[in-house]
Length: 290
Image (cartoon, rainbow, N blue to C red; front, top):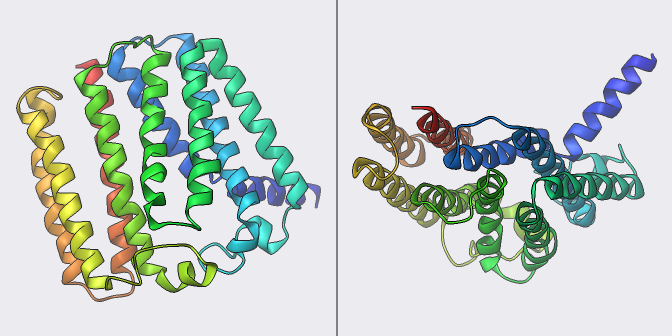
């Protein structure tokens, strides 16, 4: 019985910190690390632990801040706080402990990684979270949140002067966040309006948002491919993977948005966006060792 209770509590904490999202953020920081160096040193372990704890703490703090809004939305209504699985003071204490520990670990690496980590907390939990209730332009600082972890990793490895690779990767992640937001908006339009979040969905149709998403995806992946083909990012072997995969991704993505009418088409498109982002991270990491 005790083991069941312990497992339930662990699952609740995992949901509170959004484990998969925190792991993806950590992977982007690791990618930034390897963009600077292929050496595996103690700073990498501190980076992985520090960024994961920081991302987990930010997610817990976000759920604490938006607990009264999450309960209004079907998408978020089953999170631990709306369901009463964890009390708000406990969630706040967990978030503070995780953020403090994460910042402390990054400080062991250097002041710049720690300051970037703190900046991301402020962007996500103070600026983005508040702006969502005021303006649809909140997606801009929200997207910036996804671009900073690679810079944390890059500076943790010793990078001071920007390299073309880290600039391109951070820019890619910034641009890649936007279709992520917009796809969620198409599927959960009513939820966002019910909770009072400001979006542009009242001014444009779902079809128009889909065209925006598709055009944005094509431009963003084309930017990556152009820089890569010109020899500024990947070598010929990785280009041989990226180019055909990118073409297949665009074709399948188009089919999901405009040719498939099942209820799962948008979910599959959303998963594809995330999967392609993970593939890009993997290519950058492989490039460091080739």
